[in-house]
Length: 87
Image 1 (cartoon, rainbow, N blue to C red):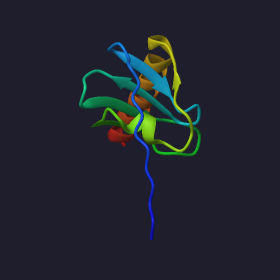
Image 2 (image 1 turned 180 degrees about the horizontal axis):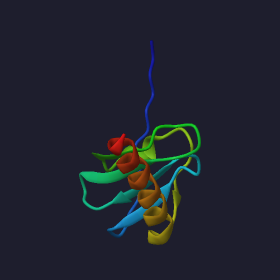
Image 3 (image 1 turned 120 degrees about the vertical axis):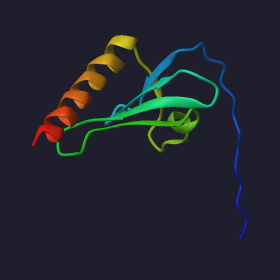
């Protein structure tokens, strides 16, 4: 079996905010880590610390977004998580 992979590099300034335009937003805050927020209709909201390369490895293309877009989705996910913890 032959497997080909390609490596690309992208220069970014930290913090870097991006989205997959589906249900994830990311805040890359270091060379190794980023905050991944998963939130949307019909899915469980999550906030995780993941490897900073994750946004660039998703099947859907990564798109840079604003801090405000990230913060809105983060706040909505956090509210949903807090509400679930109160049950």
